[in-house]
Image (cartoon, rainbow, N blue to C red):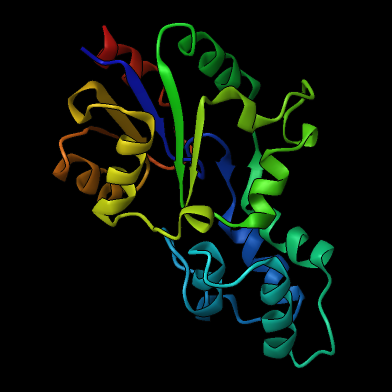
Length: 205
């Protein structure tokens, strides 16, 4: 029996726009290809998403990489938020409805800039922060763990007292879905930015 629904964030909860993020970082003076991957980051981009450095240190490293004296938190945040095209209200309404019957968790490789936004009223058209649609948040930079490492999923299961066989994990990365399945969680792979609601409804029926 499924009791817990575990969601990835980028490309699942919000519509992801990687080209816009690339444009913003390039405009700031960085070569994005050096630091950004389709489903994960590299170098100091990875370090901020695994909690090895904080937001302030990221800004310092970004300034160093661009040959500038400084980069503000606001500028770095603006670049990171380029990944977020939109958060569709219909998906949030679906989460609210699902939460009446299931325990909802967010399992995401992310960073303090994006989560600052997701915890703020500006992240949705209703003024309710996206983060508040979930019972628990498992964020790579806070856990110092990164999908697809199996320990990411073990940590979430242990922290919330969930049984793997009672969970479904929804992600647009097949590698992450396979990792969840390796620890006994049922996986649902969806295409990036696709509407996952019909497939999830069918699985839960």
